[in-house]
Amino acid sequence: IGGLIDSKGYGIGTPMGSPYRDKITIAILQLQEEDKLHVMKEKWWRGNGCPEDENKEASALGIQNIGGIFIVLAAGLVLSVFVAMVEFIYKLRKTAEREQ
Image (cartoon, rainbow, N blue to C red):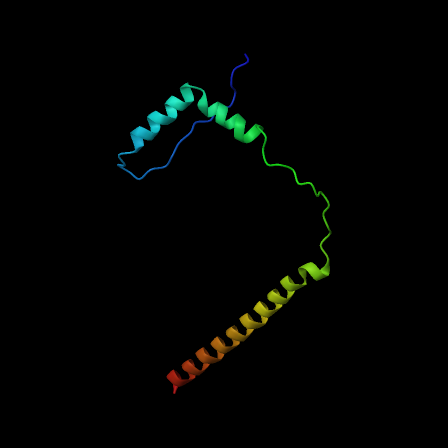
């Protein structure tokens, strides 16, 4: 009672046969035994974190802000239809030449 319920391990991926594998494993275990990993976790995850912005106002997205996305999508659609038509005509002519 009062112990850790979901303790996760730490690991670093190394290539097979790497000479650093055992050294890294030992270093991680030492940090874990000395409780330094827990201290670092508390510092980075529950600590100060990022400073909050002074300006908390956010503006809503309007059609002026996202209109460019629709232009790019429409241009991509037109280009893809054009390429598909050119490819279809090319293959159609190639097949017609082979059949003659």
